[in-house]
Image (cartoon, rainbow, N blue to C red):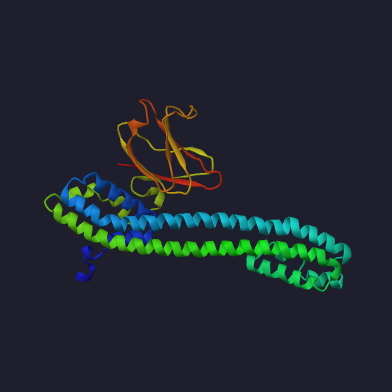
Length: 321
């Protein structure tokens, strides 16, 4: 039926819906390839027409990635505050309160009806609520006023951290939505761009592959790590890992830093040799395509990848082209 005609399906929209990260990579490669032939009038015009939509998407996408980084940092700070509450602050407060009201007595039970345990487990909102209940109960115990004042001060810090983390989480959702909206507009334009390329190269359609990376457009039927000829490598913080790829220095390779850390790449004759002066540093979301002989020497057999980040795992996609 006509409804199933392949040309009625916007493959670029499908890629965006599957993965904004891969759509970003796809568009970067497409625009780079298009710009390389900018001197051809039709291709130059197409590049200029797409550029505002591409710029809007990349700006929104990068902003969304930044918000995710901020959320991660705020979440880590929040966890440290809750850890400090249970392991440090409450331990001291509990000791001082126990001197006045021994565990098991009616007054102790009023202050700590469930002991200290609710401050270490369960949702963070419930932990805050239990902490607030302790503070409220202490209002009736004048001799413990100094402890209550310390609790109120720390509660303000804790609540502020929680609110900041929640706001960061909301910003991530908004940022992702904004990025997706910009991506949808770009995907629609790309659908039209494909039609223009088909018309331009109607007598030589394989030339379209100079611009379109089919390996990214195809929906994988296998695990991502086995997808086409792409190797996906995960590298722990500060870890150096051998890529496992077999290459010759006359081959071309494409690297995509799909993680959130800076990665360093170099080539060696033997694992354990010192890092050469010719290496590549790749920022998050960077794409680099190059001839291996620009960075490797005859006899080099290993491609090494180092995660320069101190906290987060890094990932890189390696593809021969």
